[in-house]
Length: 128
Ligand SMILES: [Zn+2]
Image 1: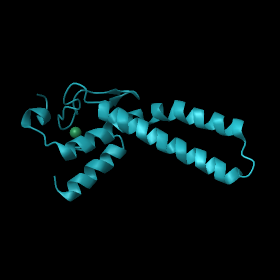
Image 2: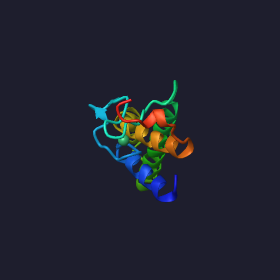
Image 3: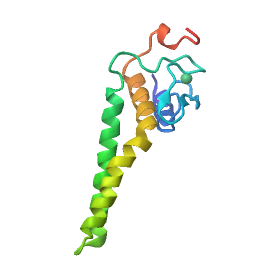
């Protein structure tokens, strides 16, 4: 993959689109990713245990958002931070953010995986 293709794949991954062709209709509802891209035929789950990378991305980004919210809350309200309010907000972030971010973590993971592991022909043949 050349640099422009990598940047485009990463952008499409961030936008919840197929990282290979940019197709937007790859989810049925919020959670269910279709097995293959309807436009380019890319197989999304390339091997058993494939989504472990997406889970790691989801956990990592959630904890990053949590830390940013906690530090921002502490800095903005210092020297008397409202502990109960901060606790409620940060618990809500840890409960809700991974649900909202779930499909994005999958398409981001697919784009990272495409950058690291080249496709073989049977993985991207339309209608195969
Ligand atoms: Zn596609």
